[in-house]
Length: 151
Image 1 (cartoon, rainbow, N blue to C red):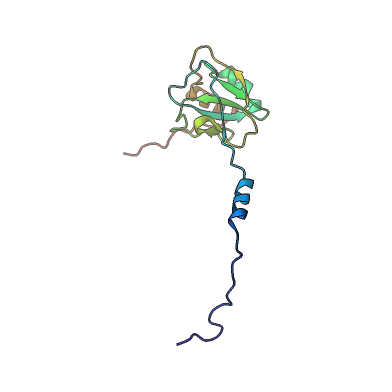
Image 2: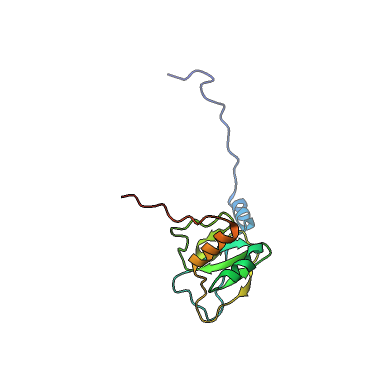
């Protein structure tokens, strides 16, 4: 039994693309740039891995003055970046003005910020809890820890 006329759409043929065209198109594509990452200064090691938190640049000097120990700090026109041990966001909710970056990656950054502070020694970290509390203080944010456990 044959289907009635109009049961199938008019057949259309797809344009044919030759191998040369595909190769030319592929060569014209740019490989995506890998995301930039905050570098460790020469002679420093990060035994606990490395994350970073970006804070608005206008808060940077005030935070620096409030901290008992400051690790590596990088700065550009808009942010100050603080190196922290990996997983420093565990059980913390950083204030909205902060931008946490696992692996110390700088997504979308046009260039690596300049190093503005290097601590003595070989460890690049700023202790995360004092930084978190100081940031909460200067932004007027109540510190929020992880949700309480229920019994």
